[in-house]
Image (cartoon, rainbow, N blue to C red; front, side, top):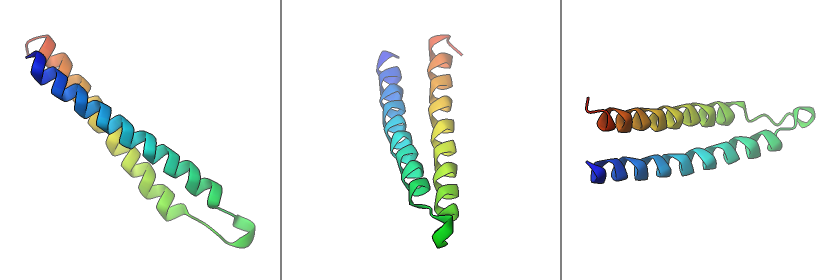
Length: 73
């Protein structure tokens, strides 16, 4: 069981790295926007935010999975 938990924790770490990259991407896209010049990145920002939410879900799902393994469910 410890090996399974370690594998899931590795998955969590990978998803957290992806989420951090996604957050950096959102920040960069927001910085690129210039409404005065007509430069909008709303579609890209929305897609990145959706990806971040997906990654948050994957992380939480795996944390819950670890808890279920630890408590024998």
